Amino acid sequence: MKDDMIQKIAENIITNSSYRLLSEDAVKLALLPTEYDLDLIYHAGKIREHYLGNTIFTCSITNAKSGHCTEDCAFCAQSSYNTTDIKTYPLLDEDILVKKALEYRRQGASRYSMVTSGFKLKQEEMDIICRAAERVRKETDMIVCASVGVIDIPYIRQMKSSGITRYHHNLETSRSYFDAICTTHRYEDDIDAVLLAKQEGMDVCSGGIFGLGETWEQRVELACDLRELDVDAIPLNFLNPIKGTRLEKRNPLKPFDGLKAIAITRFLNPGRHITICGGREITLSDFQSYLFQAGADGLMIGNYLTTLGRAAENDIEMIRQLSLKIENR
Image (cartoon, rainbow, N blue to C red; front, top):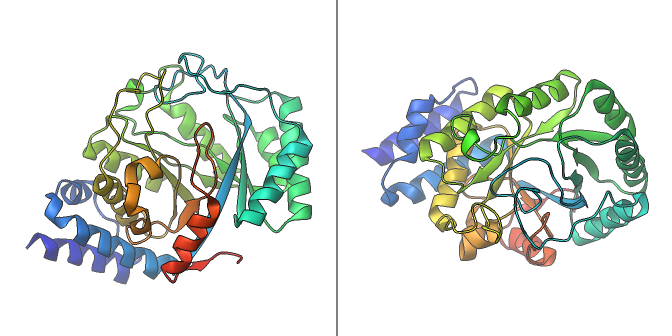
């Protein structure tokens, strides 16, 4: 009977675009025994296919400014509160940022984001980001995004005029678990940043990380918060425990828990883009090809901020072998 429940909910989502899965019902789905994982994954794929088709977009990021972050996020190798052996450096030169974009485009990425550590950029740093964005838009057909911490209206308008169309700012985890992960700023600071960008007409990419020690109820809570914010894209990461961080001893999620987390996010956000990003190699392991069936329609290719990804050509080939179309290829 529980598989009938999954099918009925999925059919309601597919046949009625105004249907909204209640958070309590999403929790029931998330807490189903493991024997129902494949049913959840299968129907999440059907929801993705109905709303977004079979085109997969590929995005890439550059760690444009590394380390010395003033925030105390428990998972982050770039936090000054954690002691890690990552390479730290100030904001990269404009030419380097453009060169990295061109390299990722050759590898198959259709979207490019410059990501900086720290709570907020200085004006001269934002100027470099925006000049690089202008050049990337002129020299490629890539969509340009930026993840530059907390922003204000002048920064938003400067980004938009430079050709940056999407602002990335993760919530990281649910409101009820946030204080266990970060104490140097409020959850509302992140909410306000997302709302301000939307108010000024920017697309917003906002998601989080699974495997930080949160419960299934809190994973649902995060997905519901993102739904209420009406974000355009949801990047999902999985904890890759890094030595020197507070979470270095936490075990990664099991593959099907990771896939189920993607599926539940899709059930709650049927028409939003869902991108699978950092930590997927260690969490999903040999099940990475399942992530599209679980509801994802986007994939970050190449390396991440402080950890290595797998070869971009392997991901492009994986998408092709699944008979899915790749955006702008």
